[in-house]
Image 1 (cartoon, rainbow, N blue to C red):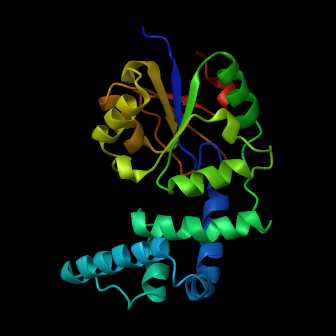
Image 2 (image 1 turned 90 degrees about the horizontal axis):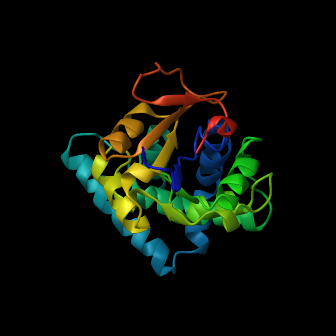
Length: 233
């Protein structure tokens, strides 16, 4: 069996409680959306996000999804659906950046996360992140955790620009980007469909069972863990 030389971590329900995302981050972006757009209307990055949102809105209209009007109501609707919209995630990341920078946001991680990541890095194992949140949002979250700044331990961040998390091709793309054989990468997530896709791409997998996660059947093809301390390399 190949040695594990890289670990790929999901965030929500794996390193960080689901409640933080749904009860803190999502409401924060909703509550500060209107003001943020008013204060940053001249930003080219924000204009790009809004252009993509208008395109997505048109696609929803043409598909008969009956979306609410642009912009704010449509963004709220996407948040409520927890849609993995790249434009939404990019805009949310920018809003969260303000909250992290001024101290209004601080991200929790499970107690075993930092010790495990430090241990893996000391062993020469590459630690990487794959989340539906934007790369900016990922970096902000790990830079402002209750266990300190963890970004110094993380090599690469991947978002859905490499592909959807339930597509095996996304994990093949990540393996190529890391220049590491898929068989030497362990992907840890709380979502079985993502683990299935990673396994199809040739990665090793572990189902993360954290407090507050949705109940999961325990499939035989994926090992299950309650803590990163249970991961042996």
